[in-house]
Image (cartoon, rainbow over all chains, first blue to last red; front, side, top):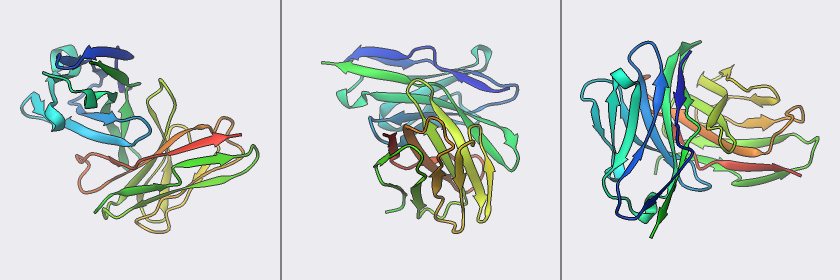
Length: 116
Length: 113
């Protein structure tokens, strides 16, 4: 069965410092992976996605993620964090087709706090 | 502007009452989804629908019901059979190919009093 693990529940980072959020997946075939961001009390916004091709994926808001098949990872990075990046981040894996659709499996999320 | 709207943003319900959460999209997407979000648990799929008049149970469908009478609307009813309904509920939609991402609405926070 497919699954997504985000090992870090909470990360605190200083403004201007770099950020890396970890995501590990379990899946037998080539995964389709997503990173979403959620501000408090809001819906989820897609940051970036990986389906195939270049393993370094660029997203919105200055984020990037690197797919590493050998490590079953899809870590999210940002070189310099802004206070507005404080939010909860979710990694998601598109599952095998069940019924007539592909579902998303979400990690438990990582909350990012940015200190001045 | 195209997007997904959910209403109301906050909803309070007494125990034993059914309540319906609204989800509307004007993205012309075929697929729509309902998720439940609890702290530290990520998102869990309640129901999903690929086309009008058809829907499937997700991982935690017990105590919930849905309908899909129109392409743009996918309301979720939280029934009195749902043992622990207090949560944040998110609606999403997806269009085009299966490679496309899901777009999310702003959510409804349901609190049972």
